[in-house]
Amino acid sequence: MISLTSPVETRAHRWPAGLKLGGLCLASTALFLVGDIAIHAAALGAVLALYAAPGPVFLRAGLRSLRVVLPFVAVLLGWHAIAGDMRMGLLVTLRMVTLVALANLVTMTTGLEDLVDLIRRLTAPLRRLGLPTQLLEIAIPLVIRFTPVLVARAETLAEAWRARSRRRPGWRLILPLTLQALDDADHVGEALRARGGPLGPHGQE
Amino acid sequence: MERNIAQIALFAAMIAALGLVPQITLGFGVPITAQTLGVMLAGAVLGARRGAAAAALFLLLVALGLPLLAGGRGGLGAFVAPTAGFALGFPVAAFATGLFVEHVRLRSAGLAAGLGAVFGGIVVLYVFGATGLAIVARKSLLEAFTLVAVFIPGDLLKAAITGMLVQALARLRPQTLAWHRQAAGTGDLRL
Image (cartoon, rainbow over all chains, first blue to last red; front, top):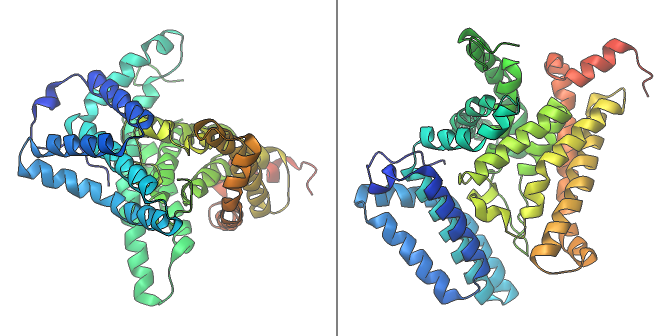
């Protein structure tokens, strides 16, 4: 689900993370201010060209990460087709795909260290005020690491459910998922403590 | 301390993972998702402060450009969408849910969590969501409320599910629910 940094080294990998995120912010905002379908189509074309530039491996990885929005695209287009407002549907869909593609592009070309580093620099003033902002640098990678783990678990639970029942599993998977996540949290907490605690060996409370 | 960080991070991941449950979308670009169930659960299980921290951490990762919002949305674009009010309301909703379960003592943990989810995850969240929609779509607050009211039945269902899950958690893993444990220990006036 989360397209972690692409192993295909591109020029963009070496750009500063702040620059890329700033660019993403500007581009996202611009796309929201523009209501012209032609411009949105051009923007999507441009983003796809950026995907294609580093070569076929990068392009395939990029398109694979975009596949998650496809059901959403279908539903949105279908809804607007029924409502008779295809223009709006097209606009919303194009914008959605372009935004996700752009966000993915930044993710694919920016190492996790760079992003966490950026957060560290942005929160430096708060740290000087005495807030333990280094906790963020522990929490962020944990979320990024565990989101795909939980999604994969949910899929395993759904498969196990389907093997036993013909009904849809739905919300019934959430209890075992929550219990496993709480167990994970205990294990991670112990692992953090074993490594000197989240505040480091000198920052214990 | 370490466990708090880990639980906050894991519940942020839960909010993200629940957003990937196949979903249906009705009009106006506001999708029905299980994501708010994650927000309700974070508040109801972790309590006000840690629940809000989990939802805020989740939003930070969305802002970093990760497509974690329901439907694979993410990036700063999500903060200018018609749904932006809902997204920005997540931490407040989790906080309100947690505040409810911590201060309204009911004998049944599940009932407290379910009502807390209605208060935080519906009443409070819809104030934010409707305000956001009113600003983005340039509608009146009342019009915006009517537009998002379609989703209230789905969210009532999610609040009920939150109640059932917390009831089960109170039985299976009572040590997880700090607010419930305290209520049982202090001998407060309980309804």
